Amino acid sequence: MAEDLTIIRSASKAEQYTSLIPQITALLDGEPDLVANLANIAAALKEQFGWFWVGFYMVKQDELVLGPFQGPVACTRIAKGRGVCGSSWAQATTLVVPDVEAFPGHIACSSLSRSEIVVPLFHNQQVMGVLDVDSEALDQFDDTDAKYLEEIVRLIKW
Ligand code: SME
Image (cartoon, rainbow, N blue to C red; front, side):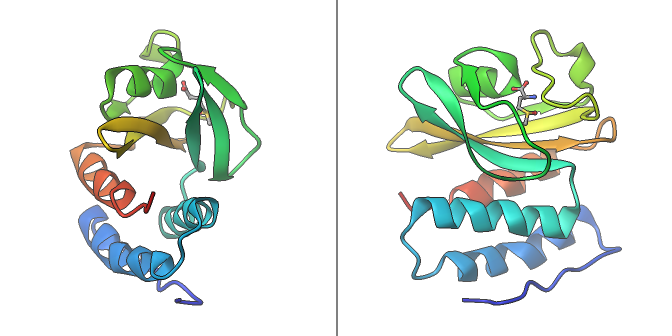
């Protein structure tokens, strides 16, 4: 297992992801524990990109429950279809929200969050949870983030 991440700054977003993804693969290699792996993915993303909040919500019965994350304390439970996370789960699709105030039903865990991306975690065609990333900047996330974050969550071993 890698002990330290190599963080590259002042590179394009795609270059930052392509530097990080093999390191996340190495972090997960040989570790079967889901919580441990989700925790390290959240930490690695936070360290590389410095986003405001990075973490997981996991499907438990009929709601999402807060999982491993990096950043300020957050809401613990989100109903299916509610907020960006619950909508991503219900629609089983990645949602990029350039301005959270323009997203109907957005759940403001922090008033500092301005834009957000939520990526569902699939296993056997089921949504097992979501990766949620929040930024203090408007319009932080785009199709490049969607593509690479979807690649990263496919590394999760169930
Ligand atoms: N904003 C999210 C809630 C989770 S927090 O951002 C960590 C939402 O609308 O689902």
